[in-house]
Image (cartoon, rainbow, N blue to C red; front, side, top):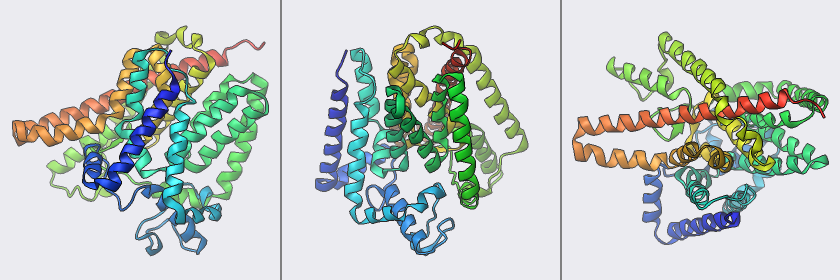
Length: 413
């Protein structure tokens, strides 16, 4: 068994190295970001800064859901719930301190995850923790880092039992209020006895319905403004393959691909998209046999983080197109995956480093093989990434289906 604190120590050392490079040799720092396909921003922690700016502008009466001068032409696309905490905009004057503070908490949270059980698991988890996806999340300090903290802390509290468990569920609900998809964390409610499960679900449904009614206008505005981009960059999601095919068809017809919002998938591709989802759900269901009865033999902590990570990633994958930093939720599932399914654990690490391999391919292959052959290799690398994401999600669905089945069919004590 390896010391989990060693992973946090190594990640903290990597953070210090990045800070030193940014201050002393910025050209090297930005070269590393480019190699990780992290677009250069005006400043570090730019996503956190944008949220704090939106809070300030909303406090001044600006409609932040549409592009506005107060936000330098940008717009707000997070939950309207967050706009009701105007006191947080005071952090804008201490952006670097707030960003570094969240970064340190993120690194500390890695030590809360289960102990590595072997040298191989320690290596895999260390590589994932210093990956391109993690660097992207911390460099931008997107709210997904805060959701990660809510997930880690919430699970820790749920496992404590008693009042702490209720606080953990409140953290899950708070995450859902901020970014919607963390509602998937409530899959852990299935651990509860039937009567308590029904009571908690009813209470959460009542609070959730009240929130939807209270913030309905803002929610509709946010959902309408959710951005999407080309599926070939630093993103993941179920839509990427059919959208990529659509863009290829549009390019053949001479359409201007700079206006992605105007590119619509042909009806037949929506059918293909639906068939892909149904096939994956079916493969996940029949794949439950792979993890039975091994899943039940995992200790409660490892199982809880595995299910939480799988639920979050599946929710993100099917709900929308996601920027690569959201792959940090794979870190939650990695300890359990390393114990149950070695290929799955390796695939998780590969996906978290995917942007580095893709950028290396784009930078080298066209020069090495020529434009036509080189970009054919680039397309194949992209397709391999997409297939790997679907494969990982299928394995996660199998774990979720098995977890749900075993808990729902559990005989009450």
